[in-house]
Length: 483
Image (cartoon, rainbow, N blue to C red; front, top):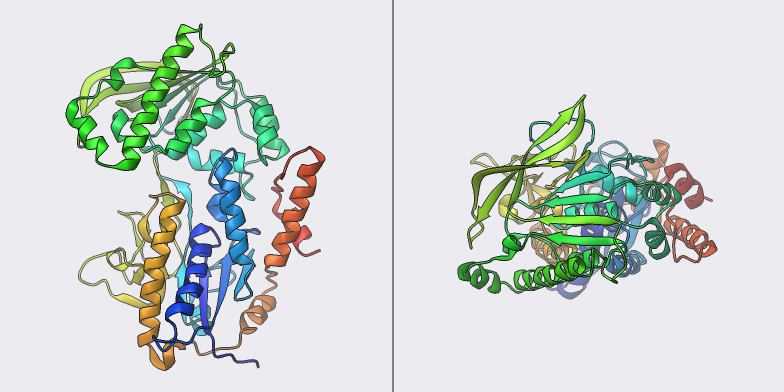
């Protein structure tokens, strides 16, 4: 037995939240460990249920986001650290239990993401042709257990949502397949699917006004550069009163978003004036309508299939309060995609806050509690949550870093108060977890295994003059990693 005196931390989830937290934990321990009586050495074991790391960056963001490459590369540099040990293809709750982790680790941090859609909850939402964004994103991102084919036979489609996921979904539905393939790592099945896409008209419905949307400027700029697509807006949506303009101006990101939306309004006018063209002045063969202050109220069907969507006009106050007007309009569509939020994953043995859609934790400080809220909620020692698992499905990847710093600070504070400088796990043999998994026939994929998958994807991409081409079959990933 090779007992060690380093702190031992288990992190569940190797997406941005888990990787950033691992990095920040090691950095903060290096800075503060001595004065906290913890020493400066820790071993972090990062468990991921998928065969490959990076979670949201690889499987939750549209493939044509240029910034994603840089984030993935930064995450990879972090994982290439001898104090961080990657255990992909190991599912918490199935391959290893909470009690088994607590026996071997001084603290367990949950950084699990979200794979479920919030339900649409409108009449007609069970019709054939209504899709949650999460499943569509899984398809175009090549999620290992996602769909391999997607029905793209609707000529007119609706997308519901006022955030970045809605923008991603709408953009991919309006995408030119050859343009997408040239610039991204999409696998062949996604290329073929998008090439066969029949969508000619898309309606994006946003319940609130121009100043209350939740788009990033980056998303809007990507929307502006879609070959063959004409953007169409309603002039009235941009008639903002002084209070709304003043309120929007108070927040830098909101102000920038509104300015970009006004640039899109100008662009849409130019596209119309030039004879229905795209952003480069070429004839457009697809139309993308952006509807603000439009709340879908019902999906209409015929023979069990979507045939239209009914939408109520709304008004929005300067402070974001939405009021319904009682004015309705129907749009013919054969498919409806809803991107109205995700529901972060539950974790076996951990209480879940259904109302806020995250793991139960004390006052948002990341310390896991026995129940969601109320008098009886007690902090459970040595258990923590970060990212969407802590706060619910809000915020961008950048928010995850500030989250991680807060949680790590709390972890170090708690560890410093614990007996023997935080070293409370009974089994301190670093190889104990490997023996446990091996006894169950579980074969984890480590960082070196991931690098083999990555090298293969780069080699396949190079054959087509691309930087990367995703492998999507989990069995192929395993074969490559263990070769």
